[in-house]
Image (cartoon, rainbow, N blue to C red; front, side, top):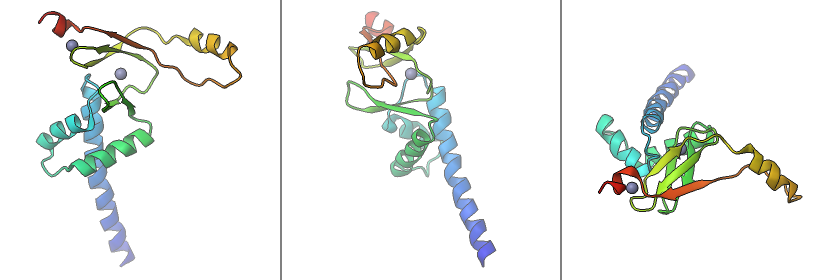
Length: 138
Ligand SMILES: [Zn+2]
Ligand SMILES: [Zn+2]
């Protein structure tokens, strides 16, 4: 009986993580920093049984496992990013698109800031704003 239950549990876990891996791949392949709804829309095409609730749950686990970053942007929506190493973003003020901005991390800023405070600084963010190429050509 115990063995049978273990097998059932294993099947459950495997089924869940298959969907989670697919979600991870979707975020990784998308350069658009998608929201949960965008991820769910793409996921549903590949896995019609997927639900919004499961998508949220799996995204939460992926963030907890530090495989995905999640951050709320100016549009008030949480966006997911498969690049978890520090990096900067360019945000289009017209279409709200989020682009990875490829300049090296400014480690000096943390050092300079640390000198100004007794608080311990562990992180910083810099965001660049403007009009993206697509909006500019409209
Ligand atoms: Zn734009
Ligand atoms: Zn990013």
